[in-house]
View 1 (spheres, protein in one colour):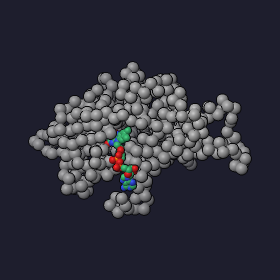
View 2 (cartoon, rainbow, N blue to C red):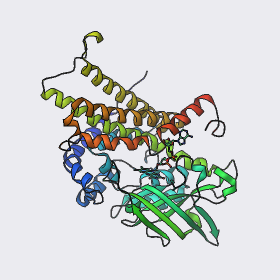
View 3 (tube, rainbow, N blue to C red):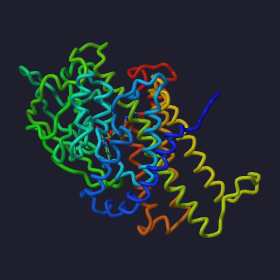
View 4 (cartoon, rainbow, N blue to C red):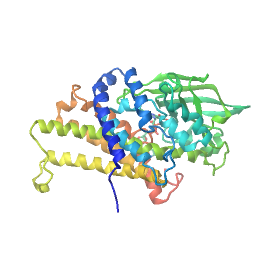
Length: 408
Ligand SMILES: Cc1cc2nc3c(=O)[nH]c(=O)nc-3n(C[C@H](O)[C@H](O)[C@H](O)COP(=O)(O)OP(=O)(O)OC[C@H]3O[C@@H](n4cnc5c(N)ncnc54)[C@H](O)[C@@H]3O)c2cc1C
């Protein structure tokens, strides 16, 4: 039988995080949208303590640490929690100290020793951030075009190149004892097989933050340009195998990062969409308008139709997201479902927040309320971790059985 209910433990956690988001994130959301390059340090310290006990927001082991016989709910629980945090504020949620995308890459492509070496630090000490740097000035969606190089020199890899739009890059590199996972090629002629992921520790000489972006949305989160100029890192910081062969697990391992992170991005999109839907419902209720769910479609007002459509789209995105997360918990390959969830959630949150602004008119457009901000925060879900178009391409390839060479 299909069961869509959450376990009592996940449900309890969900309501605790919702309370935390409502009481600590919403009150400072506007302030840190406007003070783009400043950080709410008190809140960050509090979240570092709270979130470590709650869930791995980055990518630690998928299975429960107790080795429990039944599959864990770890990934599903993470999706549920992220939806609540993004409902509180998407930019602040992205600023919570944790292993982040870098941690997910280590979990997907690293050896057990590397996982311990790089992720243990997120369990103790002062707040830390992990980041992942793939995108370059001349390469985004087409990761095979990466030009950053890694050349072996004795006991080191030497990295050279420029990475842009790295989420939490500043916090990982300069403001904490974190790390950045950098994708670079060890052999340009080998194409994808030559691309490897390298962990570069905070403050490593030769790695600098060249710029922090001014953005449309998620402005509480830093997005950095990183320059690598003869940046030397130990040989053992290459994630997985250094072997270059078309069958090499290296690039596939790095790509597997997205199977874990796309459902999480989808969950954060749903949180933003739900914030907008909740706000519209509240405003309508104040005006004495309640949505009539049980009248025939021919009797619905245009507003009721729009509102129900928003709710239905959000629910559809959530079900796809939970399925992708649940599959990961079961150890089932989920690349197709992860891309489906991400494409759907990215699209609907963009549409829902725009529709919400449209329905509420000036009230939606005014900076007095957070709705206009949610509309700005929404669009990123359609861009990072694979754009809308790229995720649809992946879905098409997997359904039709084409390779990336055959359908691009
Ligand atoms: C706020 C923010 C945070 C980010 N964080 C990170 C991060 O932490 N780490 C990181 O590495 N990157 C990050 N990125 C970069 C992001 O992942 C890229 O912007 C994204 O992958 C798209 O790459 P691009 O910008 O080079 O666009 P392009 O790849 O040049 O694409 C431009 C447009 O063309 C479309 N397109 C491209 N190829 C195809 C195709 N084959 N078929 C159909 N349409 C296509 C795209 O969908 C897009 O609409 C971030 C970006 C932003 C804005």
